[in-house]
Length: 178
Ligand code: G4P
Picture (tube, rainbow, N blue to C red):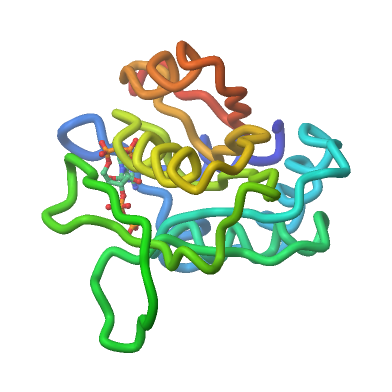
């Protein structure tokens, strides 16, 4: 997505440890007009009418998923990183290597009838995405694919997920930080 690539070139900041900071427009301050264009692009990339739910993970995925969901006319479910006392009933739970706690989704919000599009801001080592895929599989739901805003092509996540036969569409792929 050219608009996003231009914005990364203009406002992205490379930090030590191969970290790309995009917090001025994506995951702290959010440029809603730009994210709206991302939502349209995800719809174009995943035209499948049977997609009926978007799954993401807190925190940064939520805003992007919500704007995208307006183009799919479907609800958003987000995996929670902390066990909340407000969650009643059974949950799907999975471990994500980079987090200290399991992430959870209430069982009532995913079902075998669902065709799910996963949305997230970054794909790096793929830990978060693999965790979400694990949850969808436990629910017996179908995975339409994963829509990622920025994929770090220099890390192994994209390859790991695609090798499972899951369609991953990234709006920008960063192959090197030079
Ligand atoms: P993963 O997202 O593919 O699982 O990768 P990894 O485990 O390596 O990343 C852990 C966290 O670091 C994730 O955020 C991920 O989005 C973020 N991250 C990885 N690489 C970059 C980068 O180059 N730039 C930025 N800005 N973030 C990166 P998280 O813990 O889920 O955070 P949040 O969603 O609560 O913000």
